[in-house]
Length: 255
Ligand code: MG
Ligand code: MG
Image (tube, rainbow, N blue to C red; front, side):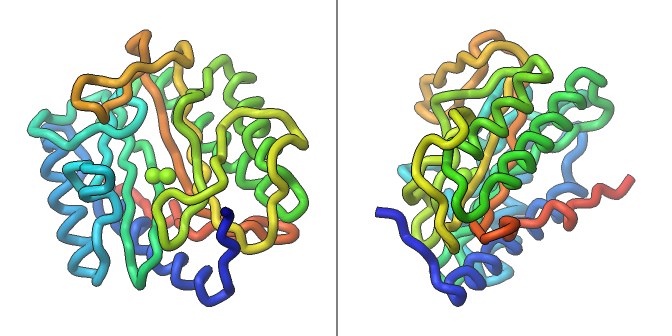
């Protein structure tokens, strides 16, 4: 069952996604060598609650924290901890917030200090791949059009696409139908209808696509130990151009 939203529901979902993006913007100024990922998690939880929201991931299927914080070779679902960020790390911060009964969900991969050019290039390509996918999230296209656009962009740069984890519908529930894979074939899969809300979230590996899950039952890492990047927007399917509800432009790192 795919929930098509009303215009009112779209606006509620916009508010929860803007809270997520404002949380990212706040965190951008706190991400530096020497801070722990648990500190970032606490800041985010406080910020979301101070703004009338509830962290969307906290206790979701038993997840213990408000943010998924995934450093370097961690692809997604990293659990905040007392370990310190180091110069040259990349850190993906996946954030969810519920406001007025609707979920927001967005992820951004940040640089910590000075990051190697090859790793920066992975981040640039992954963000571009996200926008290539968003371009296809219009009425009459299919789920496969989104996935193939993401996959073509990543693979044309020599990177690989994680298969086991996918984007999703979103609304009153964090994860709704349909699945939104970051790979696929043009024209395949369900047709996109106006006011479907989708979280599109490429997870792109610098090396091979293979991953494994740690014994904590959450943390997903690349099998080859090479870095992985993750960018995610929540978008509304529209006739000519998707409406992007989360907003990376709020994220401006002060130097
Ligand atoms: Mg997310
Ligand atoms: Mg998501």
